[in-house]
Structure formats: structure tokens, C-alpha cells
Image (cartoon, rainbow, N blue to C red; front, side):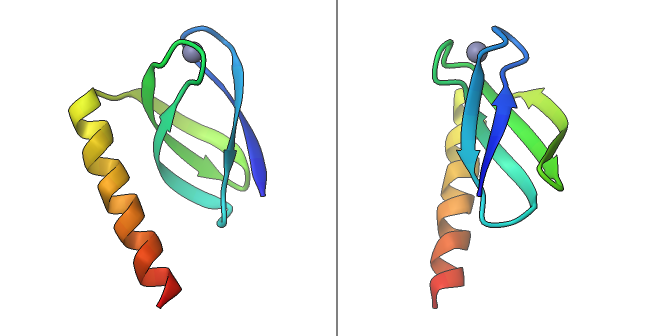
Length: 72
Ligand SMILES: [Zn+2]
């Protein structure tokens, strides 16, 4: 499912593909390249916090590991 997320910084709408109505993880605005940690619940944005590049990479790693485990 695709959810729309509005960037808190530049207010550009982006979309994110989710396999779960509950999601907590990294998001990068396609326009201003700003990084956030977002929390989604029932396709609604519950929280959004600024994220550093370093943290973003760490979270992406965790996400990809999680995806790998799901496939097995
Ligand atoms: Zn933005």
C-alpha cells in the first residue's frame, strides 16, 4: 500500500510504500532531501522527527535486515 507523507520542512508530498499499517522508520523527502524518522499508524502520520545522515543509514540497515528475515 502507498501512503502519502507531507514533508514537515518543505511541505512537499511524497509517498512511501508500506507492507504494514504500522510503521516506524526512516523517510527521506525526495525534494529537499531532509531525513526524518516517521511513525505511521493506520496510514496516518503520528510522529515525525529530524534524523541525521548517520542515523538514517543505521535505520536503513535495520529495515533491510528486517525485510530479509520476513522473506525467509
Ligand atoms: Zn522536504
